[in-house]
Image 1 (cartoon, one colour):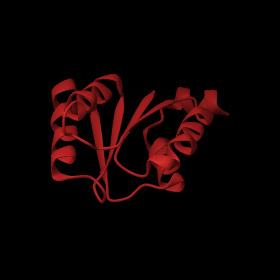
Image 2 (spheres, rainbow, N blue to C red):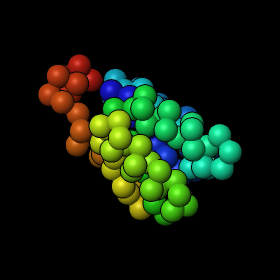
Image 3 (cartoon, rainbow, N blue to C red):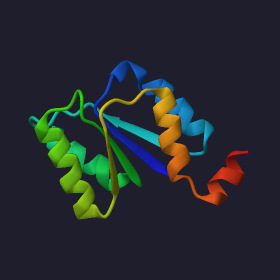
Length: 106
């Protein structure tokens, strides 16, 4: 499954990618900037992702609304969360994993 995160701390991107990879997922990050090409890259991330996690605490209203709108338009699941750390990220991934993915991760 391809996981997209919108917003959050960019310096943690590699740690999130490592957690996703350890569970058999791919990961992509968008900083939440919607100025200039940001809106287009946000839509592209949502389109490529199977699930989008949108961090509301650090994102502008524009980024949150855009992520939700693009997710709806492309038929993707969008999870809104105030904050996300590694443990919350692991918990979110565990919630969305299918039984086949769980077996493959073990």
